[in-house]
Length: 609
Image 1 (spheres, rainbow, N blue to C red):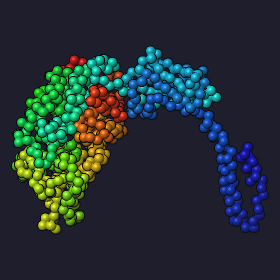
Image 2: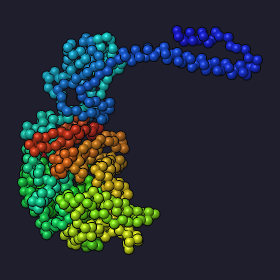
Image 3: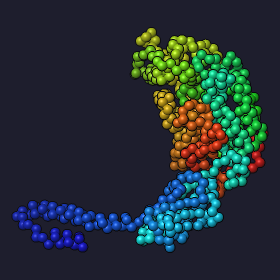
Image 4: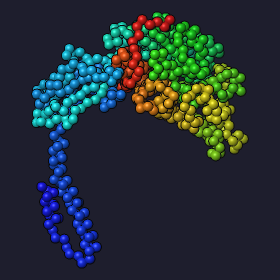
């Protein structure tokens, strides 16, 4: 009607007479444009109330479970016996019956309807409750699809516009109790990953700088619970179980002992922990695997087997290892120091000094300096000598970046000792001399010559060679490695965490979809996608070392629970925290992957002896 009126105004007007036809044609075009603009404006004014009314005629709904619109990436929820639908409008009770359905998603993609009851209460007319007929919780360890029909209508006739659907998974109610998890029927499926225990010798305990001592008794209790839990299949210790780096600069790293004797002394100082682990190994029901970390990279397989007879060990390059459970090809677990400049084994530098196959990286010296700073707490930093640099030479420029790292480190971690004082004791991995802090810092030869350094000479130039020896799949440059190191010292873990994506998820030669690191002491779960568009999960197991920072929880661990049957879809990854009282709390991080090859995951009556 409005458009007809507009047409009448324009079409029945006499156009003005122009003596020149060209001018008349131009004016007629202008009138056509004006006709269009006015028509669009009046149409909008006329239709806006109609459009608004249509929009207002649909209602919305929210669910008490988180949903995803993709079956391959279901939202993970805790166990529940009730799913609540909250509508934006009071409902017509006669339209509720059959208005929502729940389906279990099988590993084949088939959807099997789950019998449910929909409850509606006139006293709460905007709510619908979905429950199982017997009122029990929905089955854990499964993926579901929920479909809410547009046939549900409000009391004034509104509907949802379209059916609303989404996907979710229900995680297990985790327990290490002797009763186990009912859905697993006492089957052993759990893979528990711990790391960064940092057991030191008696000196670290007496000196008060053992971050583990405070948590030792709780750790033993945790191991005893794992031993008796019927659902645990594997316990993986992802590095830094023992600590040969901890201590101030002026302490003897190995206390004057051989490497093997020092390992034995750590075991004696932590005998309750060693006994608890040996009990698990001796029982033969749970496979226990050790992976080297940077703080225990020098501990040999013979030393480890001597204090923990029968333990499985995952090793590849010297001081490194990565572990994939035998029947879980999608998982890889390692400490993560392989990808860090300061902590990866260095089988190239300082060999002319040690005259051995030494691998101790600069992170060892860095750790001793930082511990001295923490213990002495000097107020004023010792400024390090400045440098001049030839920025056109890549090696020299890298040295300048290395100098900047040490400058920042000593500014933020001042020490009481002079920079030229030979206070860093060694007697480890072929090092026999005492060193000064300045031995680690680049300097100009003769005051204005090229940059050089006494320890780890050429380390940045040989970074590629070092990565090759250390079996790094996707190598990266020294500049990036230095930048990652600087970020780590500032608490920015994004670059390090990103190595899981780079080395595995974006590596076309890798099929891994779950990667677990330790090393950073920061428990977390970060989902991403691989190059095939499949969901992947990076998890960090955190630490059992108390560092006095409430913002970083300790006594944490990762639990991986594979598909419980070949019919089930999700594999869950969750981070938990243990407490001094023995309580287990799920941290906010939990996730799941799907689209795995069907496999019978539940194993009964296994033995690892």
